[in-house]
Every structure is written in C-alpha cells, then in structure tokens.
Image 1 (cartoon, rainbow over the protein chains, first blue to last red):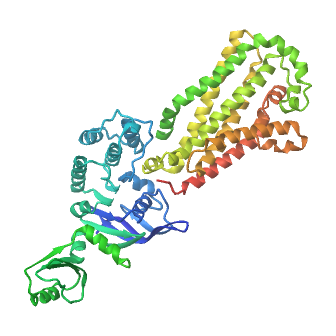
Image 2: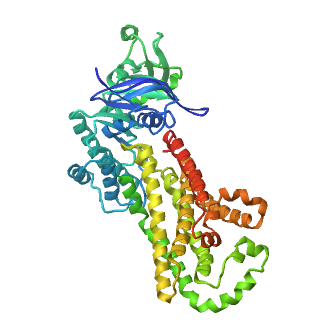
Image 3: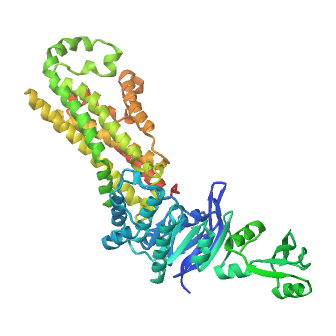
Length: 294
Length: 262
C-alpha cells in the first residue's frame, strides 16, 4: 500500500500553545480523505506543516514519499494547495495572480487554466480587491489545480462558494480523483465529508481521535433507536441519553446489536426504528467522549 | 527570476514616482543655481562662522559659492534623504509585506526555496535603488547642461555614488530587519534613516563621537569629505556594507526556518 501522506508523531507547538500533538496517520494514494475538527483543532496546522510553511517541533511526515523536512520544494511542485482564506495581492488582477502561480511552478498551464476559469466562471480581468470571498476562492481553486497536481491539500475548500459552484467544485474533484489524484481536505461541513470522502479522521485539540473509512465510522459508532408504545429504554449496557416524549423513547445505543434485539423482543412496542447516525452526530459523539483517542 | 520580475513589475509605478519626485527636485536645485549664485558667494563667509551649526553640516569645509559646493549641500538634502528614504521603505516592505498582507502562504506554497525568493527580492531592492539614483544623476546632469555650468564630472559622479551607497546600505539594513517582522514597519525605516543622519551631525560636532562614523553611512558620503578627497571614504564604505550585508544575511537565515503566518 502506498501512502500519499504519512505522519509519525507529528507535533507542532507554538511556544506553550498547542498546535498538533503526536499526530500519526496515513492517507492512501488515490483516496479522498476528510479531516474533521472544529476551529482551532489543528487542521490547518497539519496542512501547513505538510507544505513546509511551518516547521514541525517533533515527529516526521512524508508527502508523496518525500520528506517534509528536507524535500519541501519537490513536494510543493506536485501538490495543489487551497488555503482556508484565499489571500492575494489586492492590487493584482486575477489573470496576473494565476499567471504568477504558473510561472512560480515553471509551467505553461494555459490550456487547463482557461478551461478551469471557464468552468468556474472566473472573470480574469477583474482586480482581486473587487472580488467577493467566493470569487477569491475560485482564483485559489484555479491556482491549486492548473498544474495538474498529484495531491490536493484543501483547507475548508467549499466555504464561501455558492451551491452551484460547490457542485462544480465537487464534480471537478471527482474527475481529478478518477484520474488518480489524492485529495486531502479539511472541512466543517460534515455532510460533504460523509458523501464525498472515502476515509476520514477526526482531530480534537490537536490530537487524532479516530481515523477510519467513513463507512466504518458510521457503522462502529452508536445507533439511534426510537421505540414507540413505551416510555422506557431497555435496561442493558450501551444505552445512553434516553429522551422520552409522548408515548415514545429515543436513545443512543453502542453495543452488541443482538443484545438490543433480544431486549426489544421482550418489550411491547408499537414501532421501533434503528438508524445509523449522521457523521455530524458521530463527530459530536467523539467530541463528547472527550477521552476518545485513536 | 519570476519573483524578481514580479517585484519589479509591482514596484514600477512607485519607482517612477520616487525617481521623478527626487530627480526633479535635484534638477530644480541645479537650475536655481545661477539665480542665487551671487547671494551664495556673500553667504559663504557668514555660513562658515555659525559655530556648531557650521560644524554639523561641515559648512566651514565647503565652498557654497561654487557649483559643486552648492550642489554638494543641496544634493545632500534632497538626494541624501530621498534616496535612502525610498530604500528604507522598499527594504522594510520587501519581506514583511508578504506576511502582513497574508500573501506569504500563496507565495511559499509554490515550489520555491525561501532563500531564492529572498535573493530575488534583494536583487529587486538593489535594482530599484540603482535605477532611482541613475535617474537622479541623469536629471542632475541635464540641469547642469541647461544652465551651461561646467563641473568636475568625477567629483560630481562621486557625490552621487556616495549617496547611492548610502541608499544601498540603508536598503540592506531594512531588508534584513524586514525578515524578522510580521508586518511592514515604515516608521522603523524612516527612523533608521533619520537616526543615521542625526548621528552623522553629532559626529561632525563632537570630537569624542568620531568612532561612531563606522555606524552611519552618511559619514562616507559627506559632501565636504567627498569633494576634498575626490571620493568617498572607501574604508568606511567597506565596513558599512559588510555590516549591512551581515544584517541582511542574518534576516535570510532567520527567515529560512521561520513559521509563516497564515
């Protein structure tokens, strides 16, 4: 198995302040990997460390098999990066920024650049200072994609994009992924990670809480059980947070499903539903656990 | 040389404005000379008797009545301030503007070495300072031709070379300082130029302060000294440039490992 990203005990501290702590994870080549966590959890710090914009305090990391510490230039040549907040020289025009980005890479990307600008309806003659947040994000997308990178590092990529542009963006990422591009993205929008990513990791206060396939994350986490015709949750281990409403009870269950069905068989019920939790609920579940670590 | 070309392109309007402002003021000073020549001759004796004031500006060592003497003093005021101020502002912004303007992330997420980027930025700084000073020299020569005066070209050129070196030294100091900053500090750049200038006045006035001449670039570009020796004090130039290069190099070394702000 080849890894596009591999970190071992990666740690970044800002003086006494925490950045990331002992982060060890792998992202397989060709994956679409979601990196989930609230503000300040360490998502951007991780991405910026992988790019060599900041230096790790401890640990090591490789990107596309290259050492982040010693081979930053080669890594950046093969990576496309979208920062959380797209910032450019305000006095420049869109086409100047895009051209500068291509020249810094020593590549003539004209054909692909034109296609991307058309696809994202980017007006290249406009000044950066006149652009909305969403339009600046589009400039960032073109800069990240125009040189046909092997790996995309995307920090909150869809924030600021309208729904139509989000769709165009995801369609583009799907095509890139289909031709073998690995995508590593951080996001607050858990539904998009659930629907777009193959694997995901949750980071909490700089530490990795869990990393698994999105499917497994949904499967291994608690189920939401709703029972109608009773106000009592079954008295078995794994039942949490029972909430009673008129003639029904909803609770989370994490444990052996057979134990649950046996317990339910002994109860008189009008109806019962057992649902997988949305990723958002899983995310909250891991955050509420507090002590949860991968 | 992408960064160099980009910086030159982004800075061309500012360079043109500064070159025209400082150059046209130099030109104005030159073309005014025939009008005030007679007054200057009578002022010459008076100027050399103003005690500490004369000492501070070395008025007792320079003949204001001659074209070169007049030009040395006026060039000192206009080009001696204008050139280094431009260099200070350019140097202070050179590196710190990337973090201050939040563009460092964009620039350094490309396959570039920080050292190469900084070298190209330093090259841009040197190129812009040279262009401004050459433009001023050309306008000064135009002024001399316009009024039909003859000047010793060698001394005239040495005055300009002296102030060009002052600007380069100030620019390199500010460039080095800029590497340590998270946002551009124009105030610090202006303060540095004023500090060097005042230090030179103090050195001229106070004998005990003479050893400090190694610290201020104005010491080797002093018009009275250049016109007397027909050249700047090259020893001071070498020491000053070595100090400025040391500060710039320290900045580059620091910036290579610096955590860049988002």
